[in-house]
Image 1 (cartoon, one colour):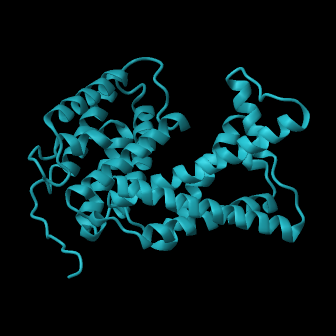
Image 2: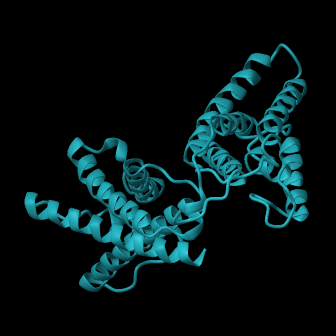
Image 3: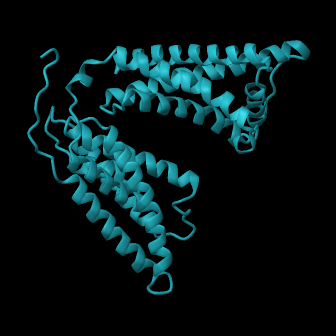
Length: 322
């Protein structure tokens, strides 16, 4: 993990330099002013915590500018580390796709935070504004991807292509996760080997905690006032759980997790809206508890179908340099 972390910092630093260079080049060519969004984000955060940026006049303005720039640097480094860790875990996208995803992740963090704080709404931006935001972030993603590919960590070399059945099972696990989000991470853990050194192996203690998480969600789902699964605050963690599930299934088989992760997310989207559709269709036709229990059974069965195969499959050992 240390090697992956260090590589991520280097990738994030390279990406941040690329983003700033493209942004300043755009300012030089078009003569446009610098964005005030970072400073306004600083003000919004200060207001949320009940404090103000110290100083008056130019001193306060300089501090706001500096804090906004530091936040941008932290975002760039953080996304770089995240991309490196994900890649080291076996999720390796083709270079163009990886660059776009890294850039999109950095965009989501910056623009998402600004939107959540009420500083700006990207949906109201002009085409020129969107382009001025997208191009530097794409440059960021390209630089991050270049560094990640130039400095592979040792275990990345032992990852083979994902089999078709693995991708399909990841999608099935995603469907189950769309109904019960805990199955995304718990399914692969509960069915993993507890033998030391086994690919994707876990401890008994971790299996117990994962099983308890599933039981807790099965109970919580039956309580009144449960948030709809398609709300953003609920759907995003559900999709992340499905992505983790696909990645864990891939790690168990020492396979590239890119396609399994994507398949898991797509499956979770389908499962989330499909499960919601089932509950709405069942309303008035059967008791709510009965509909929920049927969904429980289907989700558990799908997770079992997805996670039980391949637990003891023999793996081909890849020796670097051969």
